[in-house]
Amino acid sequence: VYGGMKAIPGAHPWQVSVQVRPIGSLWSHQHICGGVLIKPCWVLTAGHCIDQQKSMQVVLGGVNLAKVEPSDQTVEVEKVIVHEHYRETPAAVYNDIALLKLKGAEGHCAKETQFVKTVCLPNSTFPDGTECTISGWGATETSNYGSNQLLDAKVQLIPQQRCMSPDVYGPVVDSAMFCAGYLQGGVDSCQGDSGGPLVCVKDQVHYVYGLVSWGDSCARENKPGVYTRLTHFSGWINSHIDKA
Ligand code: 4AZ
Image (cartoon, rainbow, N blue to C red; front, side):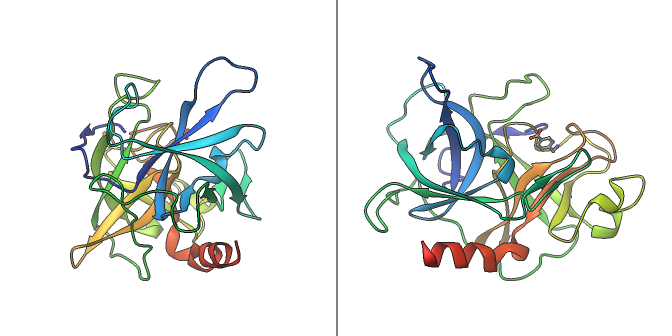
């Protein structure tokens, strides 16, 4: 996150660190992406975060990736479901969404605590200009490698026609994506934040409205972050959760 601040422990209890263990490596797991806890046994992340070759785990409840915290819950991933129409082109990433089914007895994968909670999926659109919150351990203005501390920042929902205008991203942006941030730049998600949440609040209820997906670099003028629009994928999400 560029232009962010250190998150208060427990402020984003649905935030997940998605980690892989490189094959043949003696290293332990490494953070590759963010994710979002939507059910005790289900995490949403970005499709581009998935490498089917590697064993995955998620860490819930923590803010500092560099140390084991008492609030941490580490859970293995049992199954990965990438969207059937996930596609990456040089210009954009389409249907950038995946579900991770966590290991554990039915409904008892992540344990709800002050630091680990699910977040609601949205059932309606938020207005242009709404201030929402992004969070993650991704690259910052001072480190391409990202931050050990979870960071967060406020971003604004940008009108779709601005996002699709030629001076921003043009028509490569489709209706299953949206832009958020600031056209003047400075505050944005970045590499390593992918798959993590953009959360908006209505009537004191938190909704995960988007997943960090792509952008032309980070925090640049006229190049806001592009997010997977979750209202577009509620049918896909529910059908896979119900049948699994
Ligand atoms: C990435 O490389 C990436 N500024 C993620 C988010 C953004 C740009 C790049 C948005 O995963």
